[in-house]
Structures are given as C-alpha cells and as structure tokens.
Length: 131
Image (cartoon, rainbow, N blue to C red; front, side, top):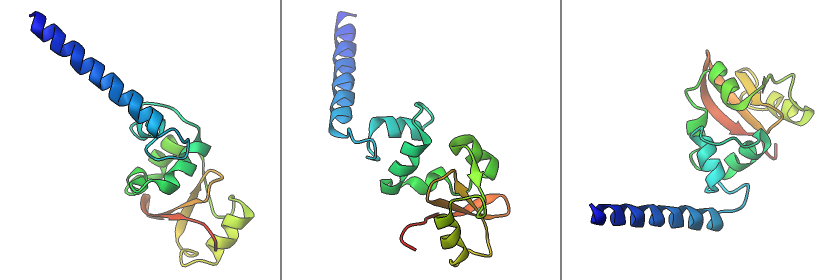
C-alpha cells in the first residue's frame, strides 16, 4: 500500500512539473500552445474573444473549431456573428471583392475571420488579410 501511495505522489509531482514547464515555455497570449488557449479550445477555460481569434491565426488546427459547425454552435462558441454588411468596412470591402461574394458568409465578431456556410453548416474558414 505504501508503495502505491509513493508511486501516486511521484506521478502527481511529475504531472505538476510537466504543466509548470509547459506554462513557462509557452507564455505568449497569441501562442497556440499557450495552456490557457489549449484549455479554451476544450471548453475548460475562458479567454477573451479578442485573444482567441488572434491566437487562432497561428493554430494549425483552427479549422476544427469551425468547420462542420452550425451558426448556432458558432454563436455559442464565439459570440456574435456579423454579416458582410455588419462587419467592418475593410472586411466588407474584402468580402465584396472576393470569390465568396455570392456565398452565405458571417464574420466572427469584429475579427478578420470569415466563415463560409453551405446551408447552416460551416464549410470554409478564411482569414481576411491583405486583400
């Protein structure tokens, strides 16, 4: 029994050291390996929408957060979705002069992220940048 307790203590100590090491190596708020962002992706921690959408730029797996989701699911996850007419003038101009101009699109809040829908499902996720 004592060996089991000792083993459990060692495992817990190693886990704590691993988390501390991870948190100290990936400290940048826009780093997709930041522990807060990882926890946010799994609905275990709240971060600001502004930080989340900024961090998504460097996240190779960002598409998993959006593609296949309904508008309702995306609103629950990200908050307001804005139409092409409701978004910023820059986003609006880029959208109106893009290959997606005749598609059903929504922007995640005031961010440069545009979600393209087919029916109610997200089928494309585009960063409006440098158009």
